[in-house]
Length: 159
Image (cartoon, rainbow, N blue to C red):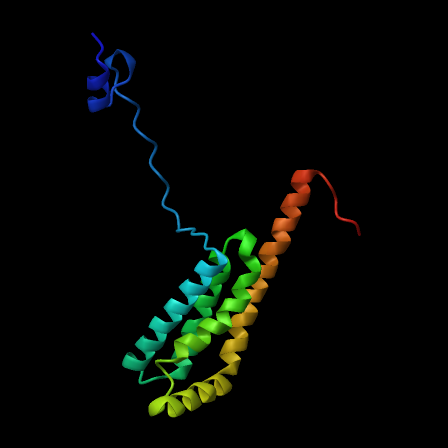
């Protein structure tokens, strides 16, 4: 005799047969989709942590901070959701400045502010490079999105 409670408890279906085993999931990289605000918070938090790490491990090395900034820019541009694509190149420079707070040298508020401005001026190459990388990734993603939408709608672009 078939019992619903027994079937649920033991994983059986109708007639007492066991339910089929689920297919094994393929090992894939995580593919989070962050909102505009989420990508800004992610980028700022990671850069602040990297800044603190650089201050402790590398003696406030701005070069190490700049090098580690580039992968964060790539992740931010790749993980932002389609609707918020244009926020990635905006939040990346803000996060760069937030992450410089633990790295900037200076005593007191004025000294810290001067260290932050100096670090922004001397590390502008890393800042522009990371922003450019994020911008290029966003542009490529946007172009692909537009082409997919047009293909789904069955229209061809005008040349």
